[in-house]
Length: 189
Image 1: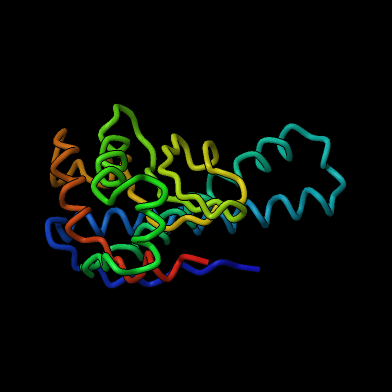
Image 2 (image 1 turned 180 degrees about the horizontal axis):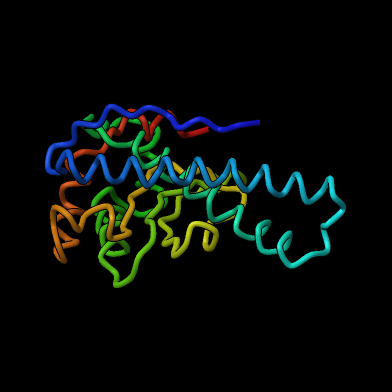
């Protein structure tokens, strides 16, 4: 199986065309590398070289590239201005999990403002239906098992440095102004 890059037509108020072009190119690299790793790992399996250091390292690297691909797809697809519906099922879940939308937003933004690179995710545990805000430091570390990603914010430098320099908080405000809440709502089970 070969993965194909998804097409995203992004016109995001507050993010430059150059930043978005660079970001989409980076995403396409994750797709390319995911395919290369699948091909190479398949060859190593066929050649009975599964006990080699190359097989082990490439297999570990696979989660980085695959998650980089999927996390970017979720990020791009939850961008596009659509107002938050305070009467939605999502709104009810946010209130029951965080006390209020304002508490959730404050927590989500605080995670995004922390020093370091990574992702901020709003996830729903499939068993309890509880919502959590989580920091994912690397693509392959920190994802909560058995959870659905509802909203994702990229806070690696490539997501904001061209337009905002070190002003990550300004990028976070821009991100919030451009959330497609309908896309987030559709991700609920």
